[in-house]
Image 1 (cartoon, rainbow, N blue to C red):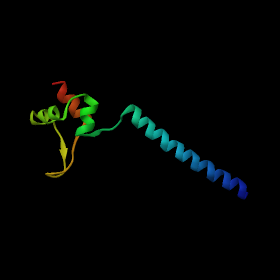
Image 2: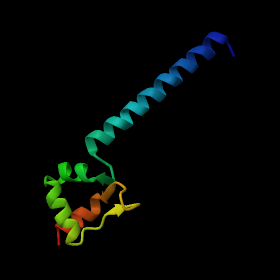
Image 3: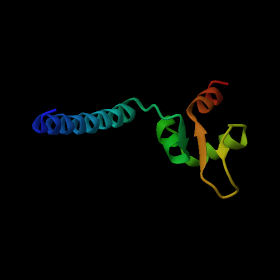
Image 4: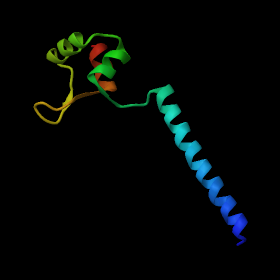
Length: 85
């Protein structure tokens, strides 16, 4: 294969990979496909305060926490189920 052609293909491939990565990030930002949210993200997404979030947790909202002092995560679908009770 010609060196110029190989170099051109390589550069174009890198550009396409970069563009694909940027598009994936943009889609995730705009469509909010995140399944797990932190407490702050969940509060912003659903429009309630952190105090309300912890009250919901005490009322039975299922959370994910790996250790005693670890970050708290919640699944979007779990919050939606809880709010639709």
